[in-house]
Image (cartoon, rainbow, N blue to C red):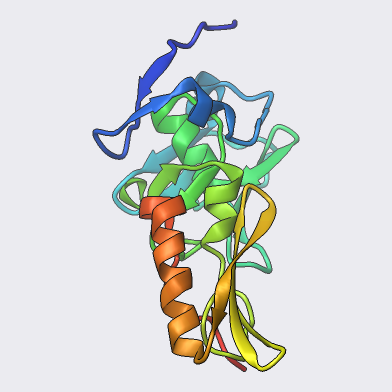
Length: 193
């Protein structure tokens, strides 16, 4: 069953229109599961983000029990008919019939409420991750007596500039992140250790 997608789709989380170019930047995700198959075995509550079993696939799983388990990164993973995927991707497939890369808006990987999920490109999704940074600011490092601001756009690291203070470099990074990533911009301070 292949369907032809229109050249313009409405973004299901806002009124913004996505062109085929932004759609094609999404990581190609493939699963052998259809929306109908998923709904046959699982029930999803979009208000809580929790999946429960409608049918047992192995004779050991109790009907009505919570499906999935938390992995080492905090994501809920569900195995169904030989396919193991994130509950957030299953949630999108369950409701919208599309299996694609999904971003957790609040950055909490186990919060799979529908209101907290949105489709994202690989670049948008990975931009939001926190990383260790001793300066305390995302995209800022100390080199050659200056604080340098850098940003990664579509896998390419771009230098923003050099600044006297970490705060100035942090502000420059924040402006660039808002310009290039819009609502996906993660401008919070980096996690310092």
